[in-house]
Length: 227
Image 1 (tube, rainbow, N blue to C red):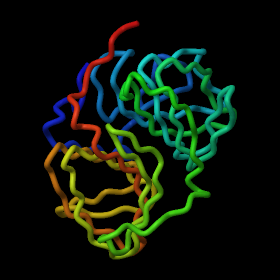
Image 2: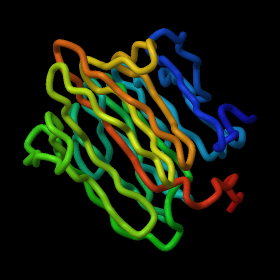
Image 3: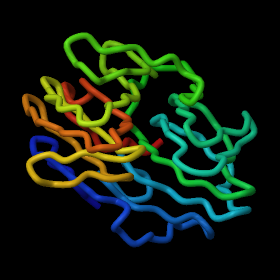
Image 4: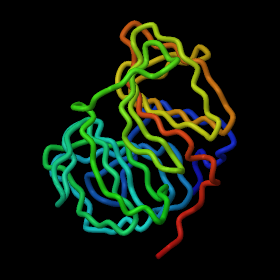
């Protein structure tokens, strides 16, 4: 299966307007954003766990990163409430689920295969810093290596900024929203800009909070390799 698989083109999905699609696991549904592959896939999705649902234990051969959007995600490593960012690198293993139910934004098979650093960040307790040359923007860094930069940004009300993507950019709206070229981006709106693209974004009267990944499209995306 291929979905938004041409990484040379801009891609937009307003996921909140989509129907949920059942996954192979009962009680777990998803909204697919981009995908290369079938059930073993390089994939970006929004996933909903019904209360009491869980996946069986599995190893993330290609790594997994996710951001908890609603509720509390749980596995044997801990409880992760809304606002938590988690990185489970290649070779990590867990049994994910949620007693109360949750919604997460998740990316699979998009790690540097030598990465072995597992961690989580509670973004609600983070120290957001002003961004130089971007009035009205504050940023909380989540992860940085030679291939990518991941952060959460807060855009103050009525902020206008230029999103630059020299090596690609990906964005998910977490709170409130913005407009770009007359198109409205609300909660769960997802955007991917190809290398070299730029876009003017205008936050509304309530501002915006967004998850952003930069630089990761400098390397051609690859389909997963079966173990």
